[in-house]
Image (cartoon, rainbow, N blue to C red; front, side, top):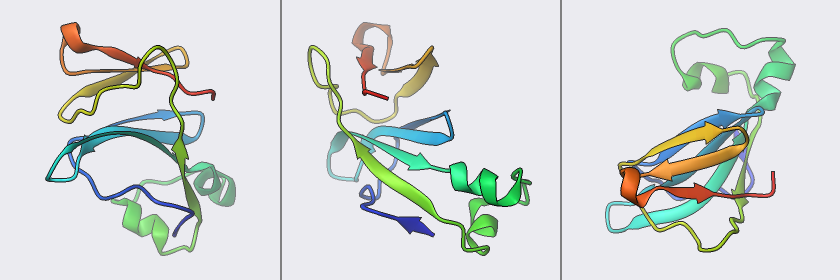
Length: 112
């Protein structure tokens, strides 16, 4: 069961897993592109079960009353990342890089 403030529903976003958190950036809500950054802390899924066992879908885990927490992350840097959807995101070290294509890539910085 998710706790805390939650991101608005979206599609076409990117997500990466880093240090027991799923980092979700951008996407769109059907009306406009977004440029917000969120984390979903999934560390409790591991600690309560010892190790996650894949059984088909996230819904299987939710049945067991585990808590995951959403957090909105403040970004920083020379400029805020532009709103975008249908893009990629990759980790290089501890830096998330999102791109539509090589000419519009941006580094998404957070303090974590």
